[in-house]
Length: 326
Image (cartoon, rainbow, N blue to C red; front, side):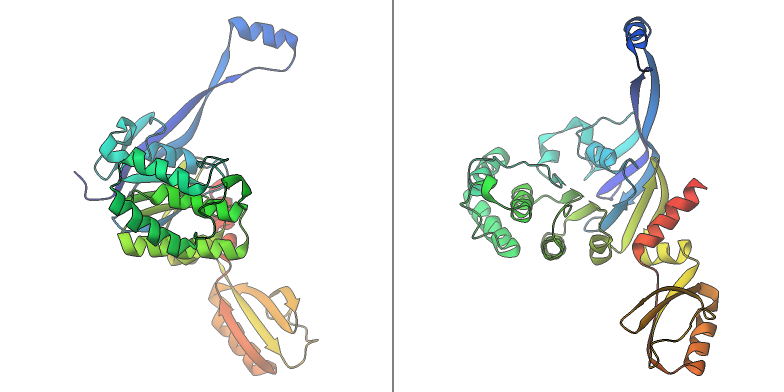
């Protein structure tokens, strides 16, 4: 048996979807001769995740991310391939497996709407048979980490989206799962709340050694939490490795941000001028020419400040998908 916390090989999920043309005639024909097509949501992906690792699981809408998480948490049965989580086969949904994992899906309400969050927490304690002393300890830690004290006794319907999401995460972690599947946990939250959730995830991982598989469209989540990323598109795996390696592999340019004493200079001879804001020029230059162009800028112009950066991770991900589709 593998020592990986999450292990999948050639995992597939195929849906059979009915098709028909519009109109009454086509509707009647479909009653007797239904036409179907197969949609492969997950197409033979393979990867391992080590115990205690936080991995970003990236891809556009429809790439197969949520389908994969549902198979790993036992909500969907794979069409083909194999999957194991903590040595268990997820689709069997054994009690000892379910006690050690959790799935948090952004904006999916798991708390009871008309009662305080603390009552829902008590229900989860009973479901997972958490001893009272353990429950009080973990609830105290979660309350401290997520700043829940003012929220616990309010009806869930009276909480803001960010407050409700914090309570949702706390409810999902009361049984201290060793594997945490997070599907867009910060979606719809403001920047401050996103930062708090990221800080909490990192601290939970540190305290409990939990393995975390995270999907997010907010690249700030990925950059803050994940050294490793797995990228899928159309159900197929495109990349599996360190985030820094992804940037190196799929980008052909660097970004130079330069501040000049003369705010009206023409920098088009040095590279593509992407933007100008408050005396700062942003240039996009070929990666191989970065050192030469930086030297020219410093030699030719009255430079106040200069910074060389990799392109934003959002651009890198877009480039990955563009190359896969070409």
